Image (cartoon, rainbow, N blue to C red):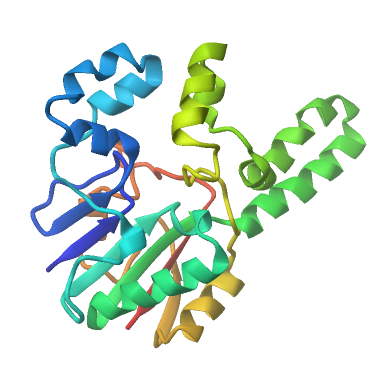
Length: 242
């Protein structure tokens, strides 16, 4: 079996059948053998920890240039919290590209923030605030869950740096949208299924973090943490068949 883990970041599987693929700035820096040892001079804290924890078994590739595999050659394609960062027309092209590389009957497993769950929590908190006014101070956090990453202008990591470092990073790397950090659209079980059917998938099934049509899926560790718990709570899990 051949499984592609697209836009993996640091969440990878060491199983030999999994090919982890990403194009983050950290991976590109790590690939530069001469420059990589100097990285601790420029980044620190959580970002340095993230850089140091990057695994070796990652293919560095820009998915904007397509998926570097032949048509009808892959059994499973997986990506988590990636699709919402693409413009809607780009997302449709990407889903079509995934379908191209899948074998007939292949499985496309998608994980995205679940807009339905986020909205239900937001509406529920309105009721809570009406009976418990002291909860009102927390209400913006419920709005932020589905809106903040859509309106964010500056990359979160950069915003935590001192003024000089912020200026340099924004000048070189650009704003949050240019870095692919912002949400361009949100999905629920209705619009995601419709989009998948529209680009030619034959069946679409809603799953949970620990259920799948992929044999022994939980053993790959991509939707669970090191303790076997759900890795990305409040997510929507969908599988589409070619």
